Image 1 (cartoon, each protein chain N blue to C red):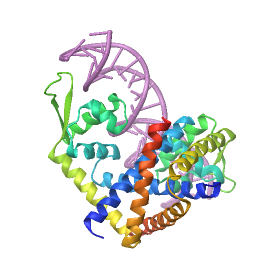
Image 2 (image 1 turned 30 degrees about the vertical axis):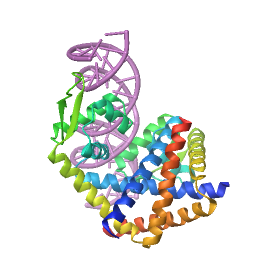
Image 3 (image 1 turned 90 degrees about the vertical axis):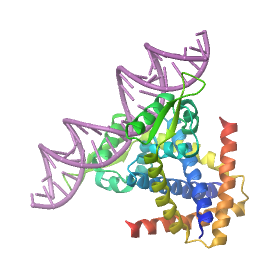
Image 4 (image 1 turned 180 degrees about the vertical axis):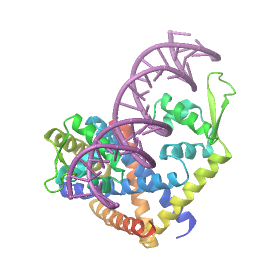
Length: 147
Length: 147
DNA sequence: TATTGTTATACTCTATAACTATA
DNA sequence: TATAGTTATAGAGTATAACAATA
């Protein structure tokens, strides 16, 4: 891959990542939460993890996760309950108010994506998804090795 | 575009945006700046904008931009000079230390991209870039209309 | 009067270090 | 001793509102 080739990939990739993150942030904001709060709620949709497990999913320090969860709990979006086996640990659970928010933000973002990607034909969209999935897999592999 | 189709696009798109933003953040951090500081420095590579112009590029309030610039100036990465025509305005300029940082972070990220995208053939890469560019254009058009 | 930029204030988010309680 | 989580502290980033200087 030559320099010019790389430069064009970097440019469109960075732009895509920025505008889509900005969209997500905007939709989260409309649902009255920050992007990080939305990420937290999204993780809790099908899990009841401990703070420790959340640090892995979110890639944050336990003190940062503790703060995120406490602020979410203060708003009634999640709840903390005692762990069944380990008396030191807590389980974090999504509350109905939190689920309503994450569902609303998701619907808004999905509608954005549907509108934006309608510029491609069904075949082109399928091709884009297939190629992008391979990129995501390659990124994970690269991270696993290079770190 | 049916629901299943949309869901797969949303999933890979969100994942791609997240991991690439995380990469950029990591590389910025290695270059000793935050992602927002790196964005600021990147904009200044070929421009000497006012604070007002920067609010458009960054999508932030003028008070937020003011703070970003002041913190960057405190570290010697940028400088503020009087505007030639308008006595109220200032011009923000990239200093050599700032240029070194943005160049270093850029090189690291470009190397990441080169490694990751080598999983695709040259033809596939070209196809991915072409499709993604159309998506970015459609996003901008959608934003211009829907807002 | 309107505009440019800064400042005061308040909040979220983040990490490090110290701490408490449990294992 | 080690681990799970919270708290104290410090700093970046963000927005709103009030402000000063200039247009």
